[in-house]
Image (cartoon, rainbow, N blue to C red):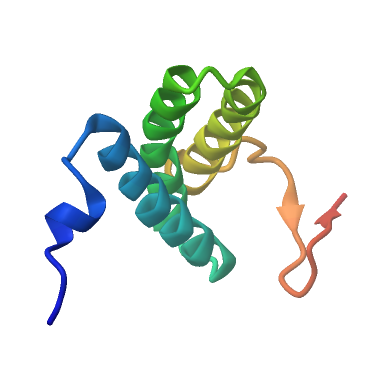
Amino acid sequence: MMPNLLEFWGAITWDGVAQVAIVLLTTSASLLVSRRNKWGWILGLAGQPFWFITSVSHRQPGVFVVNIICTITWAYGVYYNWIGNPLPNVKKCPNCRSALP
């Protein structure tokens, strides 16, 4: 017989919702970014409020500082991949990662 999931996980709390959102959004974002899909940057940025909620509610200052850095990184990825190249005068080599002069 399958156990009742509500009894197993307990009552639904904001912390529980944040934990599920962190798992779904952050892992999906990492997978999409690794596959060079620009939607990964959006999902990564969407997951950051849940990281903030968790780090503040559990009093984790180290996680809070890392979260600020990650939020800046995800926001830069959204800007670069969705809004445009911040360095429009730099030509990129089509077959390499370095920029051409």
